[in-house]
Length: 381
Image (cartoon, rainbow, N blue to C red):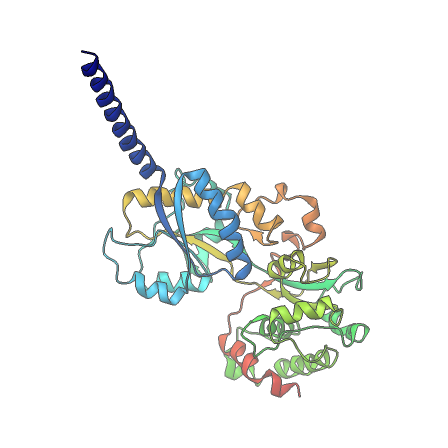
C-alpha cells in the first residue's frame, strides 16, 4: 500500500512537471514572437544606437524578439517585389525618403498607418502631418511614419570660435579670420558631406537648382557662385579630409576649427572622444542641405500576427522615451513634435528646430550634385 502511494505521488509529480513545462513552452513562444527589422538608413552611429539601446528596450517592453538587419534600399525593394500575400519575411523597415519614393513607384503594398491605424499606433499623431502625407513631393497617403529628421549644420570648436557666422555670406566674408582652419571633406569622397557643403554654398549665393542642369551651368549666377567658392577654398585647411573620421581628427588636433557636416554624427563622435569637447553645431540661415530623414514602413504582405506586433513596435519607436533619446543621445532631430520636452542643454549644442526647419535644402538637381562630385577638384585648382 505504501509502495502504491509512493508510485502515485511520483506519477502525479511527473505529470505536473510535464504540464508545467508544456505551459511554460507555450508561454515562451507567446513572449518570443519574432519580427525582422530591416535598416537601410543608419550609419555606424545609429547602428550602435539600435543594437545597444532601442532593440533591447523594445524586446523587454514588448516581449518580442527583434532580428535587426542592416541592408540597402534597392536590394530590399527588389526582394519585396517577389512577395506573395502573407509570405513576406520582413516586418518593418527604416528607410530613406528616396527609397520610400521608389517603393511607392514600384507599387509595393505598404500598410496605411495614418490615419487608418492611429488606434493601434497612437504615437503617430505626434508626427507633423506634412511628413505623413508627403515625401519629396510625392503623395504618401499615410503609408509611413517619420522616425527622425536629419540635418547638416555648421560645426565649430566653441572655445576657438565664440561667435560663429550666422550665414554662408558671413562665413565667406570672415573667411580670412579663420584662414587655414576651415575644414571640408573632399567632394569626390564616399561621404557626401563635401558635396552637400558645396551645394549649400552655391544655393546661398543665388544658384537656382530648379533649372535644368544644361541651362544652369551657363547661368551667370552659377559661375559667380563658383568663383566665390574658390575664394572660400583658398582659406581651407589642406589637404581636405578624405572621410569623416579624418575631418574629426583635424578638429581634435585644432588644425580645423569650423566646417559644415552632419549634426548627429559629429556630436555623437564628439561624445566618443573623437572631437574636442567644446565642439557644437550652429545654423546658417541662408540654407544647409537636409540629411536623410528616416521613415518607418510596414509591408502589407505579412501575416496578421506580425502586423499587430509591427504596429506595437512602430508605436514604441515613436514613444517620447525613444524620440527623446534620439536628440539627447544621438543629437538627431526627432520625428515627433516633442520640442517642449527637450532638455535645455540640448539647445546649447545644436540649433533649435524652429531656427532651421524653414531653411532646409533638398537636393533636387541630381545632375548638379554629380557634377560637384566629379568636377570640383579640377575647378578649384
